[in-house]
Image 1 (cartoon, rainbow, N blue to C red):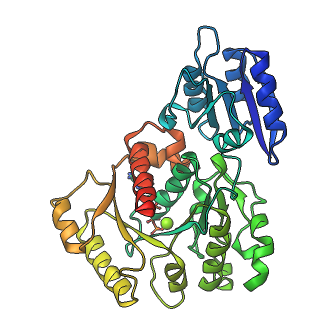
Image 2: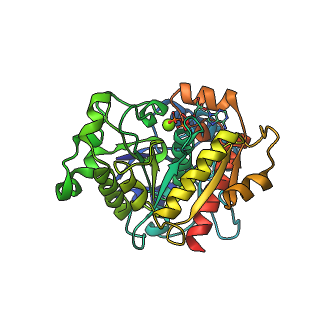
Image 3: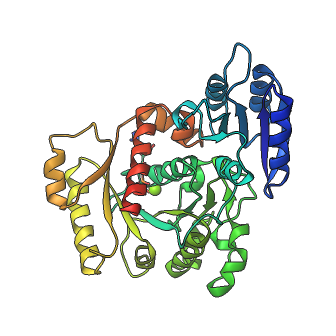
Length: 368
Ligand SMILES: Nc1ncnc2c1ncn2[C@@H]1O[C@H](COP(=O)(O)OP(=O)(O)OP(=O)(O)O)[C@@H](O)[C@H]1O
Ligand SMILES: [Mg+2]
């Protein structure tokens, strides 16, 4: 159940929104506040998943300012700005406005704005993106986690799968309860379908996460075919399935790459990364992926180029870079250690904006 807070000083608007929220299945009302101050206070002291802010609220603090303040204290909360047709507004996630709802509007539009509905508006299967690098430590896990949160914030339904069965570290980038389940709790084969939704953990902003087993000795109990099966099932109900992957390319890991619809290669300006990535691309070619699934490059720590130019890198790999993520040890190190995705911790940071550009590139190549 997602908890929704409504902030408006007009009782008619409050009633109109409340009636629509009441009809939602997976949403419940956390409260209605008539002033910016009490609204911001409730949003920051209580766990609210969605805040609907009247953009025309009277008083010193205006609607967009309310959104901005709530975003800074509660980065995981989805914020919807309410307006009227004569005062058009656009969503600006980096300023706290994830979606805009125009009055009077229908229940369907509100549902979409709240990002509450999972699957009914989707057509066909979601995109399955394997985030990969043959070199350890390039930033696969960091990028997979933050990409998932960015796509989700933009309104898509997103599942994140930790495909690294031994020492999978997606779980360490979130604050998760001891009770969170993992892929080890799922039955194999066709029986998986019935229980997959119970094995996922709902992360910040509503990303559905399927963790890798908690204990290293459990790794061998889950085959790659089962991970691929889980990816496919999650793609039935999500727009995107983002998969963090192990370094090893071998029979026992290939089903994940076979299943993926896109491979996102994380590279850095390091000769060793480029050489191993070149070899991995040759392997993907040998497997017949070329022409079948896009292989895209994301350049991490793009500002530390160590004498290699982007042009020569693209030439060596014969692929183009779709996004560049800058180095930010302070934000990314801090966020990872605080178990919070960095795009939620500071949506305005250059690295977060770069993740936004990566998400846009993926959405565009899906349409194109
Ligand atoms: N753009 C960046 N700026 C600063 N630090 C970064 C950046 N990207 C990743 N890091 C840091 O680099 C380290 C490795 O990142 P991460 O764990 O995401 O890589 P990985 O490819 O998943 O590694 P592994 O191969 O071990 O799974 C982490 O400490 C992370 O905080
Ligand atoms: Mg990793």
